[in-house]
Amino acid sequence: MHILISNDDGVYAPGLAALAKALQKDAESVCVVAPDRNRSGASNSLTLDRPLEAHTHDSGFISINGTPTDCVHLGVSGLFSAERRPDVVVSGINAGANLGDDVIYSGTVAAAMEGRNCSLPAIAVSLCSFHPKHFETAAEIVRELVQRLESLVLAPRTVLNVNVPDLPLEEIKGIHVTRLGHRFAGEAPVQTQDPRGRTRYWIAGTGEPADSGPGTDFYAVAEGYVSITPLQIDMTHYSGMDNLALWLEEMN
Image 1: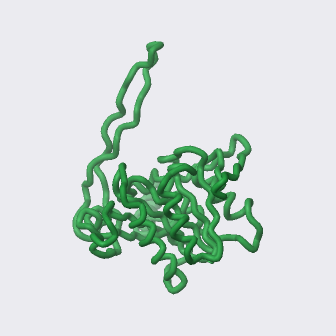
Image 2: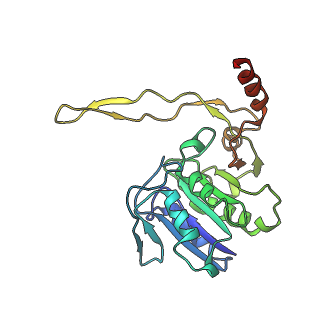
């Protein structure tokens, strides 16, 4: 299996190194293409206003002066020979959870989504602490998942969003298949003034969980379980199509 690894925390992030080290144990090849700096919150953005540069580090990792989506786009279609085209994209290990509405903004999830046209489901993995200690736990769990991917039957273009409690591996209670929960709206931006008197704004933190009961990703992680949520790229709200059609008929 050929694996492409990326992230949104940047090429020097410890979670990236831990993930690569674990997946190299079993894969035919592992290629790492990651942003040259932290690009958390970049979502699915592509860089279209300038060319991108690739730099190969002593570790063999490649950094791109762009977004996580840029990295995977180049890794899948531009940087490597056809013989090394990845079968799967794994994104992470993110320092911090990507639960519920977080997936809308997450560069970690976006990198996995850009791998949607590979032959196997893409994986986004996050460790649920902003100061994580147990990257090896998440790395080993993802390694086991990747080993079994070829026997997984899912619709094409599916992404697995994996969130791991920041615990030693032996304290993980198991793995739950979950749905996305939801958060309350985030706090208002923090207004500041710079030394020249100009008003600036810091985007505030995410809102607290609003829908976090049993069956959600929030609940599983809080109870000490790994959460896996299958995400689909098709964002069509099929159940709303009939009501929308009737509404439009009433306008005629």
